[in-house]
Image (cartoon, rainbow, N blue to C red):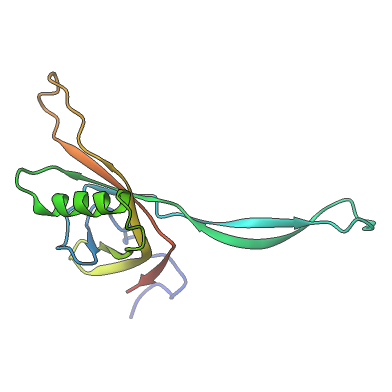
Amino acid sequence: MSDYSENEINPFEWPLAKFNFSVNIDGMEELGFQTVEGLESEVSIMEYRPGNSQFLFKSKRPGLITYSNISFKKGEFAGDENIMSFWRFYAWEITGNRNERREIMIELKDEAGDVTHTWTVKGCFLVKFTPTSMDAEADSEVAVEEMEVACESWQLDRA
């Protein structure tokens, strides 16, 4: 029997580490990204005050939800075909086919490798592709490229 009730925090438990995660994009092999940033959503506020109101404040109501762009950074490897797939996907976007959307699954894992959180990102399309910067004096830095994706929505599921 545990010394802690369901609502108490176990002082020997640690928060999840954020370094063990995976990214799966429709139609591509699992990619190993260094960082995933921008999983944000925000509810806009609608304000209203009738012209004949006796109160000197506006009524506030929740409006539409906006989802931020998500950026993915990864090391660049010689012969990495997945990056070429991203580039072709991006080139396809900028040359006229703007209707292809993808679904992205981002999974956060615990130290044992078990999935604890899954973000399912829907209606994704690539909006920015940044190859690595180059610097002749950066002898200890690796080549890192960045991709930015716009999305229509995402949903969080916990294991």
